[in-house]
Length: 607
Image 1 (cartoon, rainbow, N blue to C red):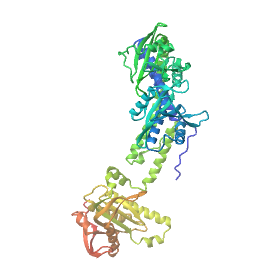
Image 2 (cartoon, rainbow, N blue to C red):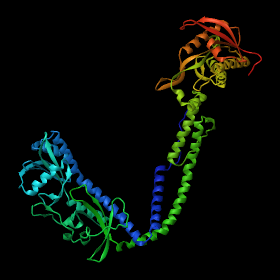
Image 3 (cartoon, helix red, strand yellow):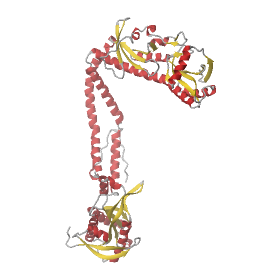
Image 4 (cartoon, rainbow, N blue to C red):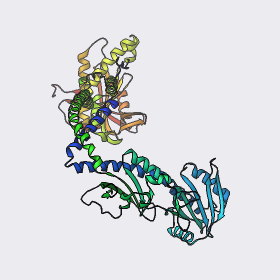
């Protein structure tokens, strides 16, 4: 049977793109509406808008700062570990060049790496304009500042950030520093420098994009400011870099930063602090938002942005103008969303209801899902319909009743030893009957016979295990517990006998039936790729041997039923069952005799 589903003729709309666009539009509209309605005062709304811009600016600045300078700390950690492990000799320029060539490849912002041995002899690793890494050694003037720096690095015990320092060019640097211990003894110290001139370029670019001024303070001095972008570095008395103060770049707002109290009445999130600072130069009031970072050196970094309060009033006109239009668009969007939700949810609800019927194995009640114009729903409907067709075919191979029992009792699939009753059947003279028939006729005959057996076995709570040629194997007592499993098996055998007698037909089929009760291993048995819920054990073998004894008692009856003494004992007194003991017999593969009885129905029936 061809289970392939035809694709829809017209192109379908992607549910991902459709829902993404709709959801994003609704969120934006809702956010704008909430923002407009939540403004209690003009100042509050303006401040919140500035806060949002400031938060964005600081997030961008912090991200770029981290990406810009953090490779220096990572290189310091790497070299610290390599030297400590004895894998790199810091006194060997060749080894240093080889190691730093790889370490500096992914960090172009790292300007230089400087190593001082314990005698403060300097080795500097630089990358020239062609990308070649070279090691240059020289003796610095040993100043008190240099000694203090080396002692501070050694005392830190591991990689850490140091204060800004100087380089050979007109640049300031922040540096990651680490002591170096080579083969168990202190060798010297190392500093990895990242130029901070680029930080001013970063804050200038981000501030201009948001119509604000951004800055970074290191203590009272400027690390980054838009005005610094065009100013050269300055040197101190010790020839170390000196950071400029805000007054030197003509920024009175930042100059008043540390002397102005924060606005405690504002509850800014994520460590933001707010200050109101008046600029005497233009007599305007500025709102300054900042965040403090203490992980980059001895003194804290203050990353901040500011903008004039009065110039932000124009945002109110834009917000109120957009408010009326936003409400109308939002209503339209909500109506569209409701329509779309109903259109999407209708086939999903149908699918859920059908899935519930499948869970109850009521495949006859499951109809085909209609195709959809939305691609994912259409593919889902096609796959679901294909699954239903496959399950209906699968249902003919796996007993529905067994599956229901296993669903209700999931522990039943685990192999366990229990006492059960087993039945074997076999058609009498089947070989001679089939010799005079066409293969198709034989198939129809056997299928009709199996219909009777399956109906009678399942009607009495049995599990039809397998078909073996013209024979059937079934058992009672699993997967659900059946204390009367022996009695059920016997009654099912009598039901088979009655239906065969009533069926007649040409040719009339007669059957041998054997029933035996005893301990069996029941559960999922087989290979991991192909499992069967079945029973195995000596009880099965013995039942098969009893079935072979039936030919000795063939008196022409529609069904010759032999039952073991164990089954007779477990069946107990039943007015419907008549057991006639026929003796003990030796059976292959079992020591001792097996005592069997012939089962007939008592008349009148006590059913």
